[in-house]
Image (cartoon, rainbow, N blue to C red; front, side, top):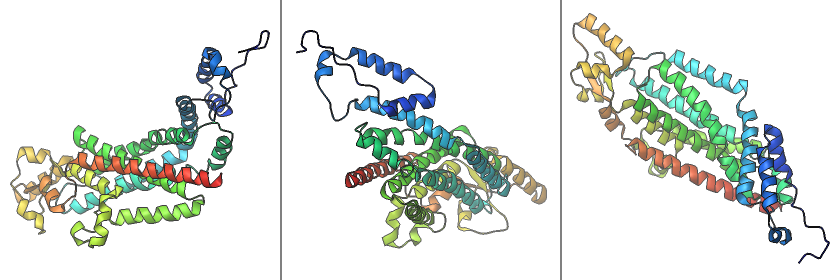
Length: 368
């Protein structure tokens, strides 16, 4: 018990990392909340003495999330990144501008679809996430040595902040390219494709975080990430069919974010659509051809309808159409419902982040 006349213990001062979050944002709400909490501290809490962490895990997470959010704004919201995204999207749109949905153009359109996913949701997100931990390693080590916060609080704040900014670039790139190329922009198909791209972005960023936690040397991390991304890209389903892969390599497609991304994009683009059969070429898809109707012509897109009208002006008849669902059957996709690919992407994303946390924790334990 406190002796008569002794001065009561004073609450501890707020940590520097919490004050830094307020200073960066110009918002005093976190500091006011801390002072209010300090005033509510009971005498028993004040007499308890020093603990390993002076602040609760929710408070640590809230302060670290605010700091990570304001730091990420400076990293992600810069002019050159937006110029890069818009410039590449416009180039893609020019190369594949309003390509008609015909049997002859099918491989070209699928190539554009694959590139949109690989660039915006694959490489761009992964290489950005690779820079996450090396730049902050010295700061984390210093603040952790002073017992400021748990590593789990920092990690959760990091992984729940960066995806907000990662998908920003993906959405901008998808909106520009889908309208310029002439992909399906109906609400449901476009929303399915957008969800697929955003989940792939988050998964690719998780892979970048995993390698960022493992490699302290940025050059080594870049090498490892390049090898992984190129392997996933080559086995992504565009360059080689699944039935032609060796057995000892085919399993990689089950854990490849780019294969799952490409499968989801194909489902969103082909399911429920139609492609015009070409008169001057023969392929295995010809067995699925059926006579065109007003409903099927409405599903080939504006460029496809214009192409069909030109063919009717030349030949006097409309070309046959091939259902997109039949094309999907021929392509032999592993997970046919689009939501199955989403679940796989979510699972792989969680696994990547769990491994990243284990590697990060082991790294700091070794150094300590």
